[in-house]
Length: 194
Image (cartoon, rainbow, N blue to C red; front, side, top):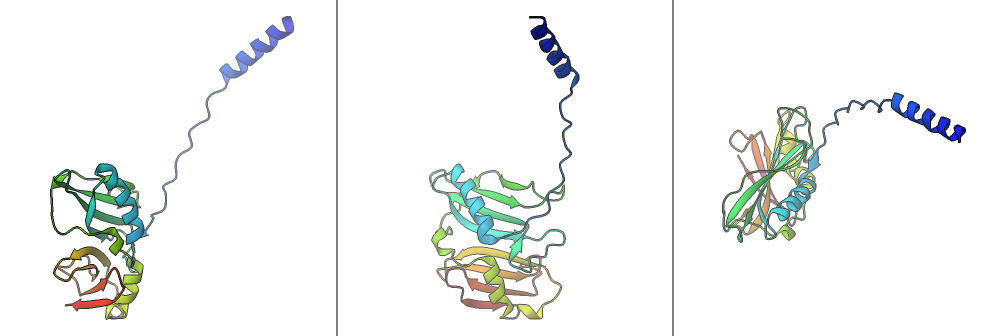
C-alpha cells in the first residue's frame, strides 16, 4: 500500500512539475495561385451554402505581389452569385495569400446586394480553364506583350449567347494593352479588343 501511495505521489509531482509544450510559432504559408476553375469550385460551394439556387454571373482574377497572372493562375479570385429565391446577389473572394494588403486566405463571403437578373450562367458552360484561355490568347497577340500583368474575367455574354474568358493584358480592362476573348465552353478564339 505504501508503494502504491509513493507511486501516486511521484506521478502527481511529475505531472505538476511539467508544463504544457510551448506552442510552436506558425510559419507563414507560401502564396498559392489557382486557375479560375479551381478557385471557382471553392467559391461555388460557399455560395451554394448561402443559397441552394445560387448561380454565378462573374469570376475575376486579381494580380498580387510578384504573381502577374501570366500562367492562367492568380492568387486572388472574386466571384459574384445571384439567388432568385432570395432576390439578392452576393460576392465571394478566394485568396491564397497571407498579407495585410490582401483578403484573408481562403473563401470569404461579402455582403448580399440587390438581385441581378438575366446575366447568370449555367456552370456546365465552363469547360475551358483560365490557363488554357491564356495559352490561346498568347497565340492571338498576347505573346507580343511583355512585362504586363494578365487578369481574367469570366462572364456570360447574352448578346452572343456565350460564356467568355476575357484575357486582359493589363491590371484592368480600362488600361489594357490587349483583351482577347475566348469561348469558355469550346476554347475557340472569339475576338481581340484594342
